[in-house]
Image (cartoon, rainbow, N blue to C red; front, top):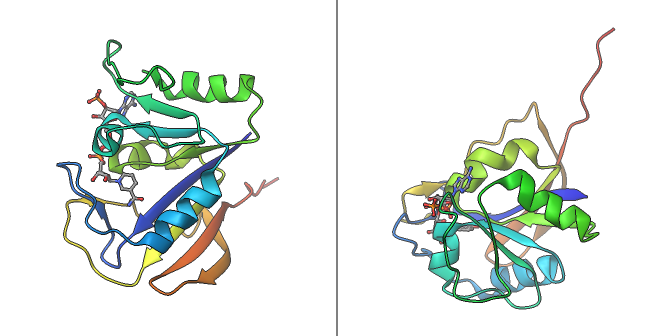
Length: 165
Ligand SMILES: NC(=O)c1ccc[n+]([C@@H]2O[C@H](COP(=O)([O-])OP(=O)(O)OC[C@H]3O[C@@H](n4cnc5c(N)ncnc54)[C@H](OP(=O)(O)O)[C@@H]3O)[C@@H](O)[C@H]2O)c1
């Protein structure tokens, strides 16, 4: 199963606000997110889920929280306290791909387990205190760029480990 990170990042690295607000609303970017993720599981931090307020349609919504008693308010939403268990569930359900969709804390912790990243680089700065982690060029190769009116979609793949013998 491919583990994909998907995010939208302002020019200054901002992806959101710790009070849950999203600093921008760009319809074309939202459509790209929807088209890319439809049919696949979405794994998100509890704060991002709270900010959404309800599950995203047409996809299995999985919330990560350290609070085992967290009630997402919708019976179709799954709650896990451990990323490995969330991924094991997706694998067992035979998904070819699972998306890690944020927010900042989840990206920080789990970029290290992703195989690819589908990142929208917005062409404006934004006001916010949640940032996307730095992209290590030794780890990630950019394999494609697609230009849209207010953002560029760049796909990164994890470099294969080079074996030194
Ligand atoms: N631009 C984008 O692409 C994008 C995408 C998604 C979200 N966002 C924005 O990002 C902001 C939210 O980001 P955030 O960093 O504040 O919060 P977050 O990453 O969405 O959620 C953090 C929460 O996830 C849970 N969590 C984190 N690590 C965990 C672990 N190892 N095991 C189990 N649970 C874990 C904890 O929940 P508990 O506190 O319940 O234990 C933690 O408080 C919002 O503004 C949102 O709009 C932007």
